[in-house]
Length: 83
Image (cartoon, rainbow, N blue to C red):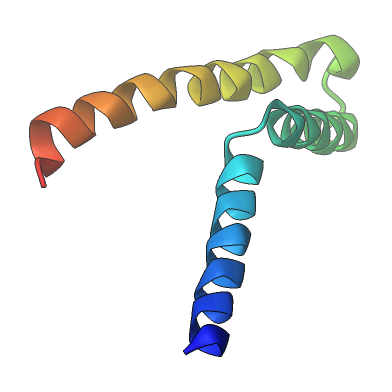
């Protein structure tokens, strides 16, 4: 019985850590930086003028989407999901 409880507690710790990572600013910043780098490389490959500057636009779009999604999630949970 104690082993089962410890197994459940360990699982809960992993789930909480995963949730914290998914909602962390650190994760968003890392993904934004990776997105920016990939876009810059792509823009260099297709010879777009000012790739360093042009890559900022989709990166900002990504960051804005991560800021607005929690709002839509709350609305969805309240209005659609309703469990």
